[in-house]
Amino acid sequence: MPEAAPLYELQKKRLDAYMNAGYNFDPDKAADYTPDAGWRVDDYETELPTEAPGPAEAHGSWAAAREVLRNYTFPPPNLITGIFLPDQPLDQRVMVLRGQFLLFTFWFGVRIGAVTDETRTLADGSREQVWGYNYRTLEGHFERGQIDFSVHKNLTTGRVWFHIHAYSQTGRISNPFYWLGFRLFGRMLQKRFATQSMKRLREQVEEMLRKGWTSPAVQQAPPVQSVSAHKDARQQLREST
Image (cartoon, rainbow, N blue to C red; front, side):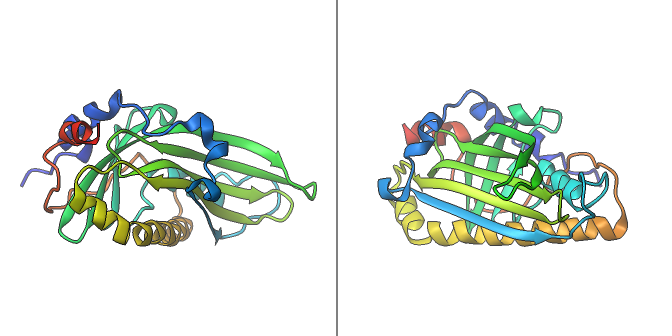
């Protein structure tokens, strides 16, 4: 039996539709997106296996978490699957997110806004090594905003952790049925995404450390058969404008 085609080939039309799509918010006004202005601002954090003090180890906890983040295998696949071209540079990556809830499948577009790879000085004078990226919502997304994923190592103590920071607001949803569903369940799904993503990333890092690992090729979750709520990404883009 022939192997199934990779998701980025099966979803080529949707990827193409989002390649030139614009953001559905203005990232340059991030300082204005506060709770007082009607935006949700979230921070989540989970501990990862510690390392010896000093720079991140080549095949330690920090580097393993970086690979999991790069490959986008940490989101719960029954909720979100990221589909992207594996040979596309990370800082240019556009992803189609396949969101699933009950019997529906929703397709959204996001684009990587920035990649972070630096060493910072903390308030107590210690240093931390940080790697991560953010992605931003594109036209047609049910939300507006940005989410940042980053892995940190304190070079003095060896502590390693994963951090999620996000600001978001409900976007323009023309379909009243989807608008009501998002109003009722959207916040719950946001929290589930964050808590399960942290758990999955920690589990994947721990498994990599147990088995030993080398930098793997980018992998994507296999296709899931489900009911689609939209015919294609282009139609969704048209409905949102």
